[in-house]
Image 1 (cartoon, rainbow, N blue to C red):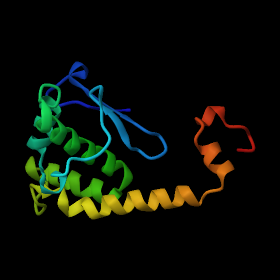
Image 2: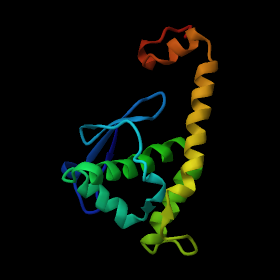
Image 3: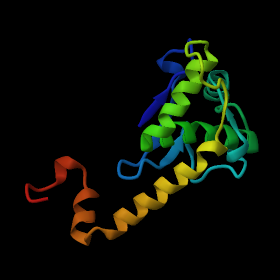
Image 4: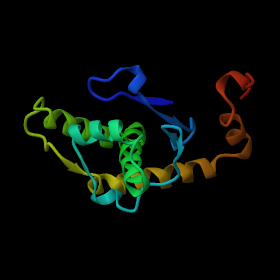
Length: 150
């Protein structure tokens, strides 16, 4: 679980993302089901104000606007957890857009990071599929439920 708090917000304003522990795929955002990114994700732009606005607005948005805001937030969080390269780019962009990092772009296109994100998913799936069934079974259990041999 990851909680996003907008700038100046409190814990009561937090937006919760429920994630799988094995693949970091987000299944719920703000209590709403999430399964895939919007087809427009590649054209979306990221900066601090956009992300802050998305955290504040996603609960009240409806239809395609809500889905696009969810997609943007899920991309930034989940792909940052999966990839240090993506995390570094998003962090630099946020800092630059707040005037706290000189020399970095204050806005970045999600499309510039999409190939990296897709490659991670394909690689992760391939590694998982290559594991023996008993290894997959062991890692599908919470650590507290694994035997000493597992």
